[in-house]
Amino acid sequence: MTVGRDGTELAELLEELKQRSGRSYAALAHRTGLGRSTLHRYCLGTTVPPAFGAVEKVARVCGADRAELDRLYRAWCRAADAERGAGAVEEGEEQSATAGAGGRSDRTRAPEPSDRSLPMDGPAPDDAAGAAAPGMYFWLRVLAVLLGLVMPTAALTVPYRDGAGGGSPHGAPGRSRSGQDRQKVEGPAWTNAPRPVPGAFYGMNLASDTGEMPGFRVGSVRLWHSGTRWSQLEPQRGKYRWKTLDRLVKAAGRERLPVLLTLGGTPPWAAPNGHRSLFDDARASPPDDLADWDRFVRALVTRYRGRIEAYELWDYPSSRGVWTGSTKRLAEMVERASRIIREVDPEAERVCPSFGSLWQKRGRDLLRKFVRTGAYRHCDVAALKLPPRRADGPPEETITLVKRVQRLFYSEGLGRVALWNTGPDQDVALREHLDARRADNYAVRFYLVGLYLKDQELRRMYFYSWGSSEVPLVVELAGGPPTRAGRRIGRLQQWLEDARITSCGSGPGVGLAPGAYTCRFVRKGTVLRVYWTTRGTDRVRLGADARLLRRLDGSESALRPGHRLLIGEEPVLVEHRPTDG
Image (cartoon, rainbow, N blue to C red; front, top):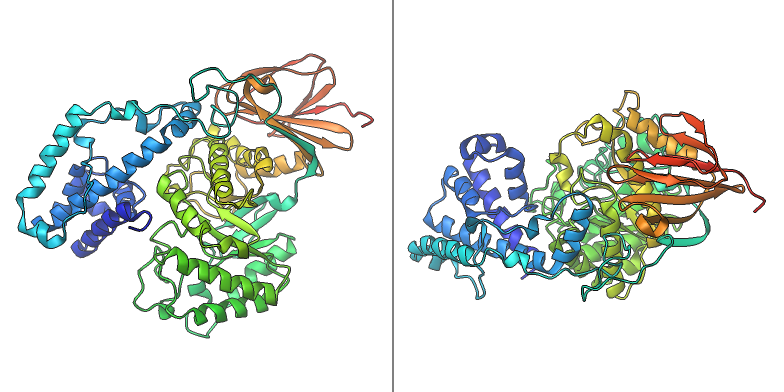
C-alpha cells in the first residue's frame, strides 16, 4: 500500500460521486447540511470525516447504490484507522504544541461512540464481495458503535512522548519521558557568533501576473500563482509564451529582488490521459514522456540564465490535486531538471519540491519516502510548507514543525538540510480573514519565527501571499496601497537592516514567561532585542543600558535604567547603548 492511500482512496471515491452527480460543493452542502469547506476538505483528502454518517449523507445525495456504500465504508474505516494510529504515535508531541497555543489537541478527546472507526486488520474484501453481501454494511456499523461504547477512553491512555528538543513544544526544559522533572537550564535556545540576515530571507509569494511588485520592503519573490505554470508557459508542445514571465522577471530585476520560479502543472498535451489538477489548464500527472520535461526546462533556463536565481522543481506533491505520480517519478524529474540547470546556469539554485501536510504523519511519511529516493543529492535547498498547525494558527507553532522535519532528515542520514519555507498548506484557502488586531502583528511574527529558527537552517521565509484577497491576511492588493500589516513587514526590515543575529530564546530559560520570545542582534556595537509573546503579556526588566523602545507603528520612546517593559503579541524592539565591542 502506498503512503497516504487510505485517505486518498476515500477522497477519490467521494470526488468521483460528486463529479457524477454534477452538483457543486454549495449544492451538496445545502442538501447534506455539511459545510461547503468541510466537503471540499473531504474530497481533497486533507480531512478524514470523524463519523461515517457524513460520508453516507454525501453518498446518498449523489445517488450511490448499496455496493458503493459498502466500498465507501471500507475506505472510511481504513482512513479513520490510519488517522487514529498516526494520532497515537504523535499524540504527545502534538498535545504539547497545541496546549502551548491555548487549546487541547483534538486527538486527546474521548470520541463519541459514533466517531469510532472499525479496525480492519485483514485485507479488505474486493468490490464484488461487497456487492454480494449488502447486509455487511449494516452489521459493520453496529460493531463499530459497540466498539466505540466499550473503548471511549483509548485516546486518553497514550503516554506523553517528548520530542528530541525537550518536553515543551520549542525545546524548553519540561517533563522527561519518565515523568520526572528535567534538568533546569538557563540561557537562550541557541547562541552563535553574529551572523548576517540576508535581505532575501524576507520572501513573498506573488499572486499576480501584472508585473507590479510589493509597495513595501521585501527581499525576494516566489512565482507560482502568477501565470507562470508550465502549462501556461508552454500551452502547446514547443510553442512558448514568455510574455508574462518576462514582465515579472523584468519587474523583479528593477527592484533587485531574487526570483524563485516554481515549476509545476503538466500541460494537457504532455499527459492527455492524466489526472485533472486543481488548475483547469494543467494535469496533476507527470508527463508521459520525460523528454518533454527536459526540453521545457532547457528552454526556460536558457532564456532566463542569470535573471532567475532559483528553480523549485514542483509545488505541493503532497496533494493529489497537484501531483498524482509516484515519488520515484518525481525524483527522476528532479534529477533530470537539476542536471540541465547545472549545465545551463551553474549559478542558479536547485530547490527540491515543496512537500506539505507535514503536521500529519502521512505527510511526513511521504517526505521520508522522497528522501529515500536520493533526490536531495541533486538539490541545493529543500523547499517545504512549514505553516502553523492551522493556516491561521500562531506562527510560533512552526518552531515545533521545523524541528520535527529536521529530525526526520537527520534520521535518514542527511544531517541538517537548508530549508526555505514556501508557504502554508492547502487549508489556507478555507480560513476566514484574521481580525484587525491579529493581522497587525501576524506577518511580522511569521518572519521573526523564521529568525528564531536560524539555528535549524531555515534560511528563507515566503509569506503567502501578495496581490490576493483570498487569504486570511491581506498585505496588499495589486494596484492598491499596502495594508498596515504590509507596512509593518517593511518596518521590521528597517529595524534590523545591517544587523547580525546572535541568539534567540523563549520562556523561563531567558527570564521570560512561557510563550514569550526574544531574539538578540548587534549592529555596529549596538545591541538590539526584539520581544513578543504568543498570547497575553509579560513584564521584562531591562538592563541599565536599554535606551530606546521602537514600535511597529513607527513611534518610539526613551527608556530609563531598570525599566519594566510590558510586552505582548505585537513585537517591539529595544535598542541598547553602544559599547566598544
